[in-house]
Length: 270
Image (cartoon, rainbow, N blue to C red; front, side, top):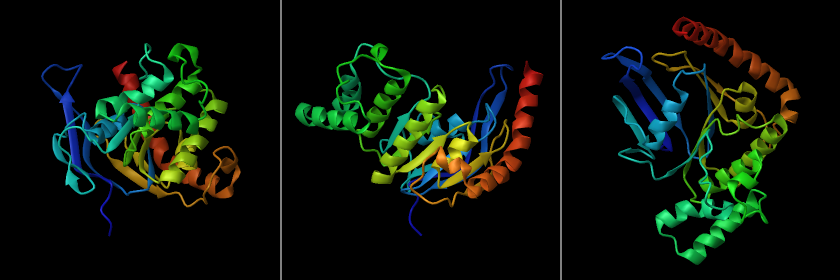
């Protein structure tokens, strides 16, 4: 068996409770999950269940309270330098042009200027932004800014791509264009992807595997589904296929109860 690109081995992660001083809150509990090289895995679960905590653990931004994160078999210590992270929130520097935003990581890495500019420009071209490289973020639409963020993530050629609801703020048409664009880029490079989303349709349309997390506190995987729909896929067209409808019903049957639990917990807190 090949070594997974990313492994969570019996991970538990606790924090000091924001509501109860002196007490701890368990965000993730006894979670084991492997993502293979070249595999696209989506994680779905109720709001606030700890999905983003998993990404931050994978990136090395958080350390587990117990258990171990491994990257290609090696224990992760510090920042995961083999991963690229595309955040949910806007992360572009407003004082830098599209090109300069994509260049930022290459500059930090110490890539020679000529090589860095060629790489950055090639990725802006791949995501459809040739001719917009001198525009600043405020001069770009939401979809175009997401394309810059995507180029910024992929220009470093990471072995693992972490994506935290990257398209949740976009309108449906732009969102589907971006989803198809990511699938095309992924098909060309076949990197390991860990994709967090609230949208079950998005998870099924894009993934090789969908993992369902329980409601928090102490979230953990409670269901795992292989998405055996043929590739390449168009995220809009595939929703009409019988296989997609069947998978949606099966996954939602597991997810629905956890969503209701999460909703009831939030109501009690409110």
